[in-house]
Amino acid sequence: MTSLVTRCLSWIFRSQCAACGQAVPSGLPFCPPCAGALLENLVCCPRCADLLPGARAVTCLRCLRKPLPLHKIVAPWQYGGALAQAIVRMKFQRRVEIARTLAPLVGSVLVATARSIEATLIVPVPLHWSRRLWRGFDQSRLLLGHMAASTPPPCPVASALVRRRATPYQSRADAAARARNVASAIAVAPRWRSRLAGARVVLFDDVVTTGATMAACARALQAAGATQVVGVALARGGSP
Ligand SMILES: [Zn+2]
Ligand SMILES: [Zn+2]
Image (cartoon, rainbow, N blue to C red):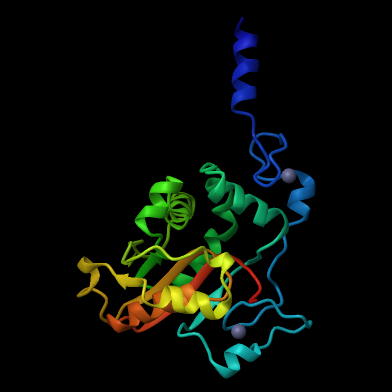
């Protein structure tokens, strides 16, 4: 009887690969093929973390022509393959438990970046309340919560930004449309308006694609007095 209960419980709570859903030994986040398909973002622009085609990490043309209003963006992984599968499952199949698996992939980078600028605040990129209601959670806040539990950050985490209106899914818009959509949608939360003077902020999002959302967040924080804003994301998608 006990062994039947144990077998049933171990089936219900069996560990799954965060990307493909295959059973994996307890404690492992990905099955071996998916773990091998994670792509580190090693050769990227040091300002915006965009993927570069060459072998050297040099400032990309876009940052040379029109840099984003952030000191820099750091993203340790490329958006694609197994990591993209895991993020899609988390966000669009509402697999909230996958956030726990993904958080350690960026936790140490977040802490190191916060320390490097002596950050005073870590701020998640906000989700509109309607999307949070539909999804049931806010992935950036959820990831930050898991990161804080395993790798305590050196400064407070605060939802100092709000999204005033829902914007179309960024993945379906081109770069110019993304910038237009999001520029007026991000604002400092009322209770933070007088508390950001001199702040050094780490912005956190799960995925950065064009940087338009992070740019809008940075402009709002800077308008409220923040003196430095650095972005950290779990994954960097290529700019379209
Ligand atoms: Zn897998
Ligand atoms: Zn760049």
